[in-house]
Image 1 (cartoon, rainbow, N blue to C red):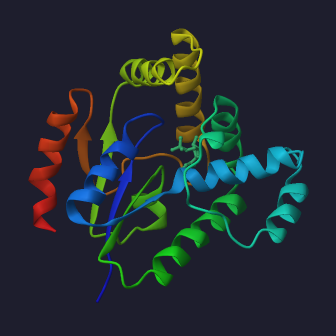
Image 2: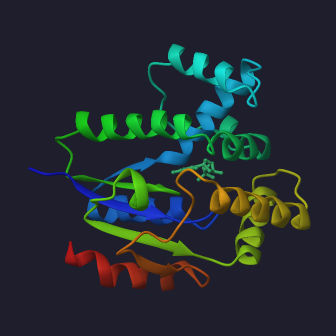
Length: 211
Ligand code: DC
């Protein structure tokens, strides 16, 4: 049987993870967070002191890497890794490397009912033929406020204007990059996540039972 693929795209801190997890639980689809792969790769390059402006250094390193874990980890959620991941994500060869890992993952998990995959280019590039595509829309100020609260609640130090600036910078990098920029995928449903989670879920419930 063909795997069902639901894609969730949207900018940094738009709530893709929370929404994907909800869909994963409710419709029993396996969740795959593509940002984790970019973050883990950024972590490896940073740890090995790879100069990310030297493309050959990155290419040589990629040849040594056979697989990257999809597991979440606190160590890859830092602001430093966020910025670094956004920087390496502009390179086409890095994106091809990560896209292959995602396709392999779906291929080797054929027994699953399907997948909900989130990122920046999932419905527009990686899984263009997905069964259902969602795009999460939230304005930058609300995203920054939520991220700020998250960091403060988890005991980390945080400054709201800095968070907002970082988010705007990451948006710029994600939207303006030449390779697979963040776009609203063709044939996708736009989900307004500016309000409460319940309001967001209500929009999704209207769309998802159809699949
Ligand atoms: O979703 P996230 O914040 O964990 O993603 C980290 C970075 O990885 C993000 O700044 C851009 C990049 N990314 C990407 O370019 N394409 C994806 N599909 C997922 C993430």
